[in-house]
Image (cartoon, rainbow, N blue to C red; front, side, top):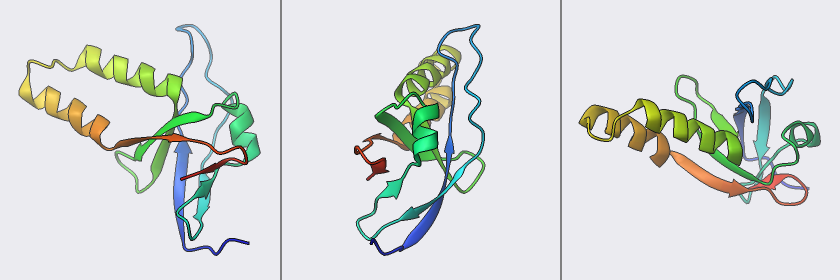
Length: 116
């Protein structure tokens, strides 16, 4: 059994796949335990609700002390939307975009739902 060394709150970020599609019914957050190797576990119910996605992006929350988990498709849509709204030719807007992206990390889930 792994030793609990820390906890973190993870909020899944959901984004509709198509413009008129409803978002998933997944609501809530995870109080994840981080083991001695620095891994957190994503419960099976969350993995199923996220279509068993294996690749995610994780970043710190903008306004809360938590981590936000983006399935790869949601991350790409979010980045595309941000880039469309923030001009790379306006220094302050480009800095906002770069800061948002710089604080993200690409992760892949292990088969049992652990992430490093």
